[in-house]
Amino acid sequence: MKRVGLVIALLAAVHVQSVSAAAVQYEFRQTTHSDLESIPSTDITGRGVIDGDRSRVEFVSGAGFTSGTYVITTNGSRTMIFVDPSKKTYVEVNAAGVASAIGSARITISNKKVNLTQLEDHPLMAGLPTEHYRLTIKYDITLAFGTIPLTQTVNEIIDKWVTQAFGEVAETFLAGGGIRTGNPDLDDLITTENTKIKGFALKQTISVTTTNDNPQIAGSKLQLSRTLTQTRELTVTSIEPKAKVPADLFIVPANFHKPDPLRDDTQKAPFQMLTLQPSSK
Image (cartoon, rainbow, N blue to C red; front, side, top):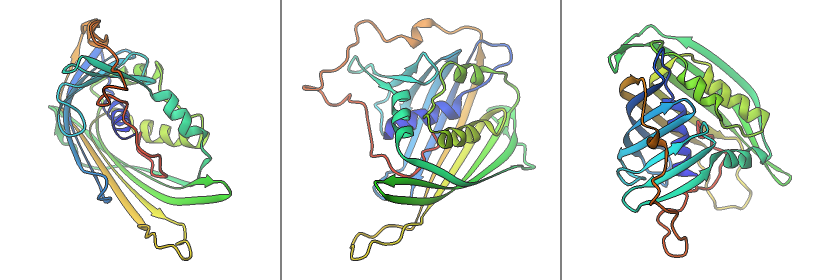
């Protein structure tokens, strides 16, 4: 899923933590880039709020979503509801089911190497001091098509500038329904990516380079790129704790409806072809 994957990534990257407040409100900007010409670059701004196991992310500008569209979750991030106020419509996406479908594929992770380094810079971001950590993860991922194993080597570089000024909102949210694939290899990788660095990331950059380890099929004219790099950068531009947020932020308005798929395909849940490329959740 292209947009669903994006939202999961946003939810994973922006889950904040608060010392005394029950909720946190923030604004963010996220950019993505891929070596593949078929995958366009994106530049998205938005705002969000997290309260317990509930969250809401509203898209302010950028391609992929109509301005004002928002996604709400009330059970961690297992189910996401995309709401388009301009059409008064909404679409429910079972993210947990999508994750389980991925986990049911014959995917294995091997030769995993993990390294965590703390760097010396401590820039102010969103008015808060940060600590800079770099996490590198290298592994081989294999997907079996029948009797044919297809393998890629993946090198991830994750930089996070984190603050310890907040408490445990993120942990509370994820405890309410963090997504699991059911594949131990994949779930261990997800846990490493998301929990190895402690604290809330006011800025995060992720670079994922995959190297195709499969030989060219004899006689095939299909040219496969040997290496592919995809990057994502997310920056929280402002953040503030909230003692309380309105409950209706996490409720679809009563006069909104699910669109008729036979008459309106503009609100269908957006999906993309699954590949060996990990999506950093």
